[in-house]
Image (tube, rainbow, N blue to C red; front, side):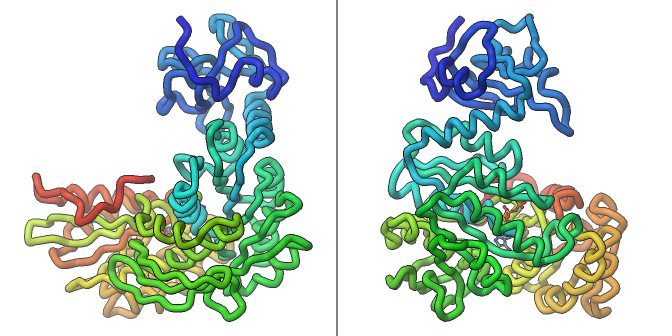
Length: 472
Ligand SMILES: Nc1ncnc2c1ncn2[C@@H]1O[C@H](COP(=O)(O)OP(=O)(O)OP(=O)(O)O)[C@@H](O)[C@H]1O
Ligand SMILES: [Mg+2]
């Protein structure tokens, strides 16, 4: 049976891109690496990774409607197979081929925090000008970037690639693959510092994205960062657009009025004044929006149209999406930041907590991981921000113990070994009228606490307070 597929990948292109050999030739309308999310007509690429070997799932992929599979161990029972020397290399070649044939404009985003948020803002902004492609999730690594490129629809005019790293040397090859017309560095902060040594090294690694810029490419860099001049040097002869609040920024945040649900801002982007409402609270979100608008201007597009499109932006699931909890005595507000954490995003989230009207503000914080030797000090250093924003600070994990010890007694609440142990404690302590922030690195499993709080919701009254949430 042949599925009617629009040929994102014709069999001829698959061969030319990968240099592989077919069992039986096929076209594919999409690319997938995961049988749980595969769509009929997709090419299933059997990657081998920490989570397992995709070759074990090829039969499942075919059952789910895969047009064919890419494998490096020949599996004769499957007719429609493309055999390559290595599936990750094969996927990367698909990405390179897709990038080479893409006639549109590509924006790449890196930075210690705010990549996915800025990518989603750019998706909204650029969609106002034409078909725009970006990854469905935070696909920013050695398979995520090629997968994003390989999925670029033929009709796309814009593509946004998120590029990330845990270790030195990871960004340059991905930037070379993406060949951006505009490269955005959102921030330089202590994330993954345990693997990188120091902030200078992190800045240099982020700057590696600039090595992929094409000849007329533009670098969008954070002027307020202490590493701005270091980044600018790395841009070499490329045009640099600085974004931020400092004088001299070509994309400059001039005024911001913050409230619990967002900000009203005035910005000057490439000499043009813009006023807009951003429905995502926190100065950090405004800065991401200014970075996105700077990228739009760098592409030569109308920033007023983009700013209008950005008014529809709302925070992403686990990255600030707000939700109402209907507790037995009344409503409480949950700020779900369980997706990830480092010092910069912790401070940003605590600032947002402070903006919330509430009878009591509660911070429930789990370990920020991958900070190496800097870990204990980075956690303790949050104390001033935490007590400024929260009346009660609950903590869990061995690193957050250092924050717990640094918190003045009036705000210090329970500490537990891990999120599972803290979940039942906080479930018994939250009250109607609270604004509750839950944040920690993904590996700290703070989602368990979000689920425990959700479970308190009175049956039949679980509607969200607003349209936030929903994406992730
Ligand atoms: N400019 C910023 N400064 C500080 N915190 C930010 C900024 N932008 C987003 N955040 C916060 O950082 C966290 C992660 O956001 P986001 O997912 O956009 O970052 P990311 O760089 O894509 O992360 P990852 O490295 O996990 O892909 C969220 O809690 C978000 O609210
Ligand atoms: Mg991300």
